Structure formats: structure tokens, C-alpha cells
Length: 324
Ligand SMILES: NC(=O)c1ccc[n+]([C@@H]2O[C@H](COP(=O)([O-])OP(=O)(O)OC[C@H]3O[C@@H](n4cnc5c(N)ncnc54)[C@H](OP(=O)(O)O)[C@@H]3O)[C@@H](O)[C@H]2O)c1
Image 1 (cartoon, rainbow, N blue to C red):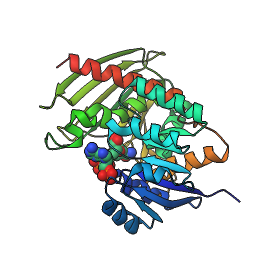
Image 2: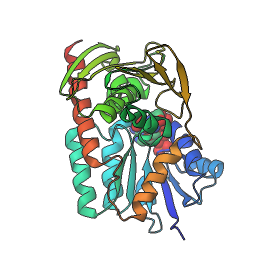
Image 3: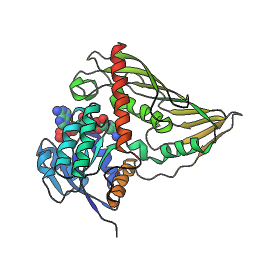
């Protein structure tokens, strides 16, 4: 019989609600504990989602000896602190994207996971969603022959408010760390780490990036053209052009979605992809598969990938600021 894992959630904001909907459909996951800065909020969340325990402090929840694995859903600037706390307490960790504020923090998190022999993975849920994994598998199958160009963008209107998480530099705001990470991830998942990076960006009044355009050149001379924005609704698709056609992840490309193929003669077909749940179930299932195998990192989203990803994000954010 498969082991059942007791999950705890740190930070009960918007995404925590979506994540637990995915968790609930997994038979080997127990919705065990939740922690917020206020006990009242944790009690409400516990009741709404059928958890067993509520805590008014993150540290108190981490001291619970029965807790196996923690999902960290606090603001970007706090991922480092809460991951280190959780690993120090000996818990397995799934931490929201971006993994931390910069490369040095990610390196310390990975070192701590190795020292404590605890599992650690960045919660880049798209990596495990079947439409995304099929996108890559189809590209590798040769259906468009040699892939040459990825066009991918993520944009919506987030009305400006200096106190909002996505505009607050103190909370790690900016379109690149928050949503640009998905096109960047998609390019690196398909083509590997870019060999060159060009960036042009427009700042919001708080100095965080508002709209950013990125061009990568990869090892085999593939090009990625990526955009993120909180100022406008973009098409939110991922289009991979090759010598013999185009594979498209329809809007929203980073969530469970439709995948289609257009050949150069104009014929278009949908590629069927089987999916269950709201998408967050796949990353949670990956965590538990790895724990079953006694792994401290996921083969699908290894530490090395997260290190490369934060290096690229650091460079994009620095180049964006220089272009203002
Ligand atoms: N995977 C995805 O699809 C996805 C989508 C959106 C966001 N995210 C990521 O998930 C994380 C949370 O995003 P969200 O949209 O859920 O944000 P949110 O609704 O603002 O929630 C953030 C949580 O952070 C906690 N927090 C602790 N200290 C805080 C402080 N000083 N100021 C503000 N919040 C503080 C709060 O937890 P308490 O409950 O303890 O008060 C709050 O509930 C971010 O890292 C974001 O990048 C992922």
C-alpha cells in the first residue's frame, strides 16, 4: 500500500486555495495542517477545505512531528526564509515560484536540503501539466522537424496599486518574477539555458518591471521571443515554430490547456491530452512519488534546473532595470 503524506500549507492567500483543490483529489495526500499569520484566518481556511489542524504561526506548524511535507505559498520575498525554516524542521518542501529572490538564496536552500536530507522542489506547476509535457514530447517527436522559434507571452491587466504584491518591490513584485517566469521556464524546458539574453522593459511607478520583452538565443541557434506584462492582455499562448509547422499551446499556455499542430500546408489538428484535476495535483503527485522513492530532488524539476532558472531571472531583471 502507498504511504499517505500529511501536508501542511504556509501562507493562506489566493494560490493556497487553488493548490489544495488539486491536493484533495490525490488519494495518498492528507490535508493535515494550515498556518497563517493569524489563527482566525487559519481556522477559516481549515474549515473551508477540511484540514485537521490550524496554526496562527508558521513555526508552530513546523514543530508538529506528524507533518511530512510543506507547501510554501507566501510572497516571493519570503520563500527563502520559509523554506529554510521548513528544512531546518526536517520537513519536505514544495515552494512556490520564483524559488527565492536571487541565486545566492537558491544555492543556500539547495545546500540546506542536502544537509538535512530533505526533499526540496520549486512549485513550477506547469512542468508537470500533461499539455506542457506533451508540447515538449511532440516537439521532440519531429512532427514539426527542427524546432526553430518559440513565441510565448503572458500578460493581463493588473490595475496599478503601489501596495499590491505584484507592484511592491519589498514583496518581490514585477512582471518577470511573477508571470514572465512561465515563458522563461517554457523556453528553458524546450531548449535549455539560453546562451545570450536581450531585454527591454518599461517600469511601473514603483520601479518594478511593468512590461518586459526578452529574446533568448539557445545552443542549437533556436530563438525564444518572450513577453510579460501587467499592463495589457496578451494572447497567453506558446507557439513553437519548426521547419514543417507550428505546435501551439492555447491560452492559457501554462495551465491545463489545448494543444494543436498546424502543418505548413495549413492543416490544423488538435493533439488529444488526458488531464484530471485543476493542474496543481500533478506537482503534488510528483512530490509524493519522489518521497516514495526516497529522493531529495525531483528528476523532472531538479535543483540544477531551478538554479539555472534563477540565474536567468536575475540576469533578465538586471537587464530590464538597465533598460528603463
Ligand atoms: N502557481 C501558480 O499558479 C501561482 C499563481 C499565483 C501566485 N503564485 C505564487 O504564489 C505565491 C503567493 O501568491 P498569491 O497570489 O497567493 O499571494 P497572496 O494572495 O498575496 O498571498 C500571499 C500570502 O503570503 C503571506 N504573507 C506572509 N507575510 C506577508 C507579508 N508581509 N505581506 C503579505 N503577505 C504575506 C500571507 O499569508 P497569511 O495567510 O499567513 O497571512 C498571504 O496569504 C507567490 O510567490 C506567487 O508568485 C503562484
